[in-house]
Length: 464
Image (cartoon, rainbow, N blue to C red; front, side):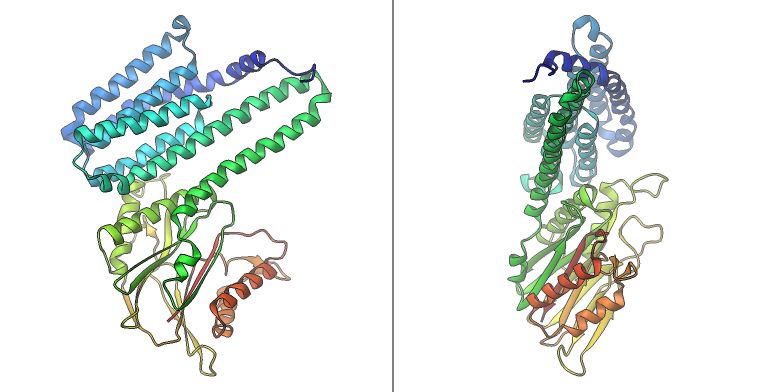
């Protein structure tokens, strides 16, 4: 190591000095919010308000005592915050264990907010994150065994698996942020001592950027494990394709498929936002579809969308208040009955196209409209419409998000637009679907040129 390198102990001292005040404030806020949320307990589960209050008060009181006496006891602020987060996590595990499915699903979002908030706010060594993750799993198992009336399947599907996924992701996020901040402080001190260290630190920054990308790539691997492979999707149809082009590493678009008794259900979804925020919404959407169709056995597309909307509004606690989350999704649910050659569909905002007589002189593209409302909170929402379309052999069905027609490009930097999108689908509908996919991809990239991709792109084609 170079003579200009700063000793580890000095870097840690500067790290604590730089971040201590922020963590003190965050701990105070966490203690207060934990108590304030008791008001919600009274209205949501009034029969459990007392044990909830005792748990919350105990966690907050112990954390407060440690916080105000930390200089006397020698406990640093990072350990203090760790004990607060640990207590709240165990507290949430207990609260989960006494809830029915409806309240369990609602509280899953609060549990998820805890881990996301910790991931975005705290800076501590990775051992704290690992201990909290292990303690969360153990406490959930213990309280579940003691109190819960839910089956293991209900516990996992309605939030358990999602919370575990978010918790694991946040461990990597905290680790990356901690190392980034620690190394940034080291760099600042070394640069102040000598300009000779600049090139070395530049290489470290490149490495740190790679670590961030690696963490987001890990999030992508989680998402990809939930979204079906294109080969699996195509195996359900005579001929089909999936053109899936995320704007960022993690996508806000998603697709899903399920088949039973020669009836295929598939979804084309476009969540609010893209990247990591959109990725969290896709995991919600995929989880809800599995529960609604596979577990509960709902078979009507409009009923699937109505139930999904209820779950999104409930999970995200959307009441139409100013400043709250307006997240949701535009999504098309298709139910293709292979034996009857009949398509049932329901759609939020995104239309569905069908090309008849593909490759013939009389070929035409028919547009089937969607309900003009998202699958999520909407001030003037109505029940989704269920539509039935008789099909003929050779008909081509296309569902899509708005990323393809909304892409800017061309000579004048304008949008691709739906008209050009319809034309390319109609003109090439007679081609094998893999060729159609390649042609669409080439057209998109040629149109985009050097322009940045503006949104996630998802186009699905199915031949009857």
